[in-house]
Length: 320
Ligand SMILES: Nc1ncnc2c1ncn2[C@@H]1O[C@H](COP(=O)(O)OP(=O)(O)OP(=O)(O)O)[C@@H](O)[C@H]1O
Ligand SMILES: [Mg+2]
Picture 1 (cartoon, rainbow, N blue to C red):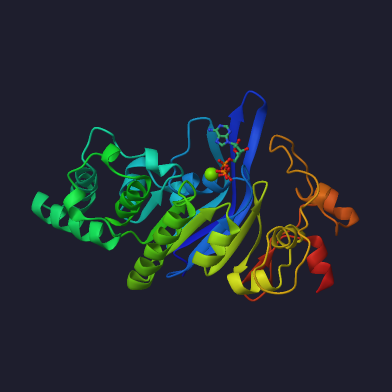
Picture 2 (cartoon, rainbow, N blue to C red):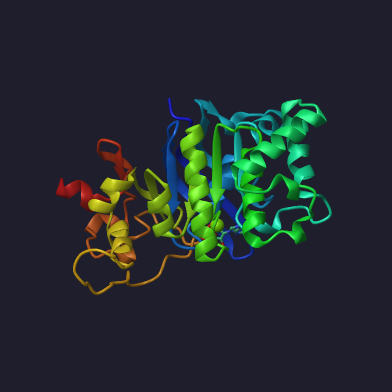
């Protein structure tokens, strides 16, 4: 059974400009031990997926279709109280811009201890020992636990946030742009720490990033998102070797390769649609170079085309 599964999830925000259909029928599967990367350009709905899973959406948001299954249980049907038990303990999240998420007037170590006392019924002493162990695990000196966030560097704050996401031994961690705000060297060191922790605890992760290079390094599976839809989902290797969706193919040609012959980089012409526009067809249709007549009027189904490789594209289905 999958640890986490999204089935045709639909979510929208009410705004003055109209209804923003931020998630428009997204499906995804995360098995135990997987690190699944959600990749896509800014505004395509990645963070909205993370917030929907934890049911932490703002008041103008509504989930109006689909299911979010955590170990087979639909999180959308849980009461607020039951959902509070799931957060931290079963599913934790590293929020986008998490470096600003630490409470500035509270010692960093105490912020971790508070989560432990609240969710794991530990004594203060047990919680303090565990906090120190997790500090060490993420490469932070436990001697700095008594410092306030402003006494930490950016990389240290990010490590503290990662420590916080690990503290209650969750079944799955959602990491939203966990290293994006850091310079490349610190990013690299933190990614190495994540790799180490993942291997040690066979951790399950949903890793959200617009950075396809980071995603390819960290994740064994990828979900490519475009304008509120997951258009392709599968093994990292097969997705890189033989991307099936025209958008994924475009993405793969948009960044340079270190190996192989010198090639001209090609962008994807056009721009993503406004999410307030509703079209019955494929959202990638206006930019697609492989489109068929029906793509403008009929939304392609998200289908398993090869084993563990799902694609939402009429053209791909035709070519097989
Ligand atoms: N609170 C909100 N109210 C209205 N619209 C919102 C709200 N939050 C997000 N949106 C809109 O929903 C869409 C998806 O946003 P989301 O933040 O999920 O994208 P993202 O893929 O995480 O982008 P980024 O890579 O920039 O973080 C965007 O069009 C965004 O403008
Ligand atoms: Mg985001």
